[in-house]
Picture 1 (cartoon, rainbow, N blue to C red):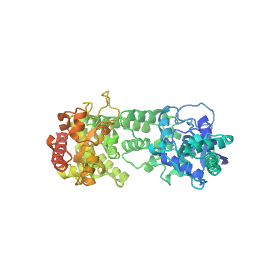
Picture 2: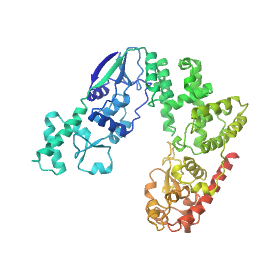
Picture 3: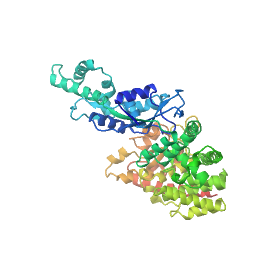
Picture 4: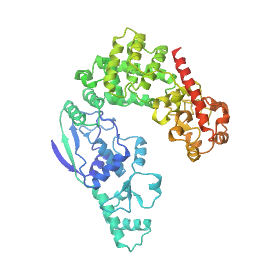
Length: 542
């Protein structure tokens, strides 16, 4: 193995110019902005940030995005997140980010600022927010990193004026120059770069061993690496376009989730480490498994769309979908009536928290039950027998906090969708965007009696009362902020919301729509919501 040292700036330059590339088995950039800021903080404090592992190969040519045609590539095997973070800090778009988005969004979110009141012993950094962006003593780090060495004194003098400090204050001038020099020195630190030239299969094993002991990737990511080196181009040409299509329709699945689904559909198990390596080779078994998986996912997605699940983000968890995909593959084959009955099980399993613990073990048990069943009704009967909770609702259920129970939020939305509820402002049916096309509707949860008014009331309700589900209304994205602070009857009148549109979401008499009658309002609405939820479940059983 060859070792060398590169500065963070040199690493970012390589990423920008195409000196480094990303193999198709690498997942995308997943670091939150906070980790980008922490990386800069570590560099400023001269903390170790780990080595970058590169792979030079003449044989492997499958990039994450098919961009270059170089005969020999240098691939980032371990270090993509740090490298991309360095590019964000320096404002240099990596070679593997061809489209403006999501780069522009990441660029704004990761615009780290430095507190100009800091000392060189303790430089304070912050991500952008309205307070930071308005305060004169916070300044974008990117701009300071672009200052040439000979221009540092002049830049520091400019910052003195920004802070309202006299230009003759040499101590302050020296402190600001020190901050700029410290930030620039951080981007000149040495980072070890290790280069390997192993066989592609060996590299997949290295990738697996590097990550399996930690939390950076899961076994689905490792399976992707095994597929990528055995079937060059499959991830890029087959998997990623399908994932993009699903995402455009609101079902933004992680690649590893779809790979686990394929194993479940083809093998009837969910634990990927139990799958023989030859399964990932190109051949009939793999190709048939991929086609069967797409068929099952598409069948389930269609019925979920029909029932109002227009975005997977509405579901509290996604693991519950894997047995449903397998049930369709083995017994149902896209039959809409049968899938609607299976959706009742999905709701019950979600309320039961069936897959919130040892999810893979539980999924394997349920897949085995589906395999052993003689038909879809027997399979569903067995799956239901493993659940403890019932799909029956009492008024007190809707007095629980909406922000602590994703299942109850889901039920509130499904009832509203089933009743054909309309968005208050536009009159468009909930679940669809303004063009009447489904592109992944995500509801917003509006406090009917605004929190601000309730918190100012004397006596003041508890936080649990204020945030109970019975005080929540489903709205389209962006509308929540329009209906705030005022009494309900005032904001409803301001936006000319007809009463019948409000009643679509199960509301008591209009006389209760006030802050003063809040307790009576939620008590009456809780009864209506519970009855609405029970009626909805009965409609699915018909």
